[in-house]
Each structure stands twice: as structure tokens, then as C-alpha cells.
Length: 310
Image 1 (cartoon, helix red, strand yellow):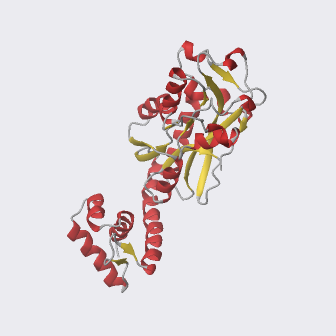
Image 2: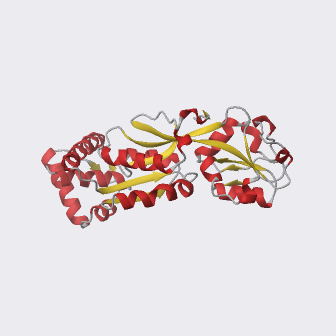
Image 3: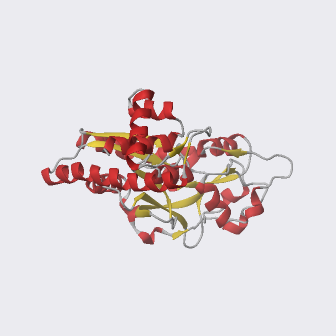
């Protein structure tokens, strides 16, 4: 039995296809198939049911694959330990980030991070929270930047900062006369929200009445905050924006931002990772870079009241 053979069965389980698994492992399909078969013969078990399409692991195979993931992770820990002891900072770091954060947060810290740590290859993908969690658990991502709390089994949350919610109003909106707005003043015909799958949508609906996004004669849900802003600019109504999304607005657009009265609703933004994640030094460095790149007051838990969405 070899580590490579264990990596092969993990890949087959991930892709449920021998050819795709071979491509991901940079070997030919006959080579991968032969090594998987050799492992099955050595253990005297059938790991995969090849009669099914896609290929699926047998019941015993699923148990062996789970064990293989632990063994492979522990083998990689040897290299991480050596690098840590030598004080080296390098390697690949795969990061997933949600769409309502990516365009506003990434420009604040990416340049500084890669300049400080040129030996780190940072791979960033934009995806919704559920996909981040799924890929973390499947070892397809190292870290995620999402909104918490999630209270997800096996996932460690490391809060970085807190974003206030703001109301963004159309040019002739009646609430522009107010210095602050109240949640209960937002009416159904006015509110524009993100489409399903976005945690910010869930937070908005948790903050407001869940029925308030139903329009009488026109219903539209955007996949981006920029889409919502454009609707408010060109049509009518109101949408909610997180704090970082308000910082690059034009002066005219900023004049149509209103805070909420009382203790402001906020969202908690965290680094998330599996509890067995090995690259702890990289986590610390990335956390520090992000925390140093945003306004200091946003790192305080006293920035507002966190709106839960689960």
C-alpha cells in the first residue's frame, strides 16, 4: 500500500470517474486503474462498484476512503511541520469567498499578501457559502471567507470583522428625508434582494419581514449587489448593502445611503476551515493581513448586533 494509491482512490471517489480522476492526478487512466486494482487485491476488498455510472464506492470502500483521507492528511502534515520548523512560508493556498464580499474585500488585502509572501500561491474562487462548506469538507479548498455563525460540524470559525448594514435608496425615495431609517419602514414594493443561495439575502430576510420582497406586478432577484444597486438607481426602491460595499460608491450614491436607527444590524465575517487543517501559519498570516487592511473599528464585536441567518 502506498500514499499514491490512497490518493488515487480519493480522486476516484471525488470525481466518480476513473478517467477524470486520472486527469486530476496527472497520470493515464490505465495507470490509475491498475494501481487501484492492485490496492483492492492487496486488501482483498472491492473498493468501487464499476458496474454503476457514475462509479460509486462500495459500503466497505467508503470506510476505507474515509481512512485514506486521514492517512494522506497526516502524511502531508510531515511537510507542513518541517516547513514550520524552518520558518518557511510557501505552498498553495486555495481560498473560497462569497460573492457579496469578493469584489470589495479582495482588493484590500490581496496585493499586500502576495507581495509579503511571494512563495505562497493563492488560488481564489468565488462561490456561495454552501459550496464553500462542501469543498472544505471534500478537501477541495483550504479556507473560506464567509459570513458566520454557521455552527457547522467539523468547521472552525475565526471571526475577522463585522460589517454594518446600510439602506441604499433611490433618488426620489421618501426616506431620503430621514437621517436614519427603521427596519419596519421598509415596505414590500420597495425592497430588492439577492437570489436564493446568498447568505446576505437570508440575513436581509431575517432582519426584515420575510414577505417583504414580494412585489405586486414585478419580481426580480439579482445575483450581485451591483445588480441591486443598478435597479435602485434606474428604477425605484431600496436595497440593503454591507459596509464594505458602500466604501467605493460615488459621492452622489453615498448621499443616498442611510444607517439604521438604534444599534445597527451587522454581519460577522470569518475565515472558516476544517478542524484538521494543517497550514496554521498561513491562516495566521492571512488573518492578520485582512484584519490590518480594513478600518480598525470593524474588527470590534461592538460594531453592531450580528444578524443570524440560519
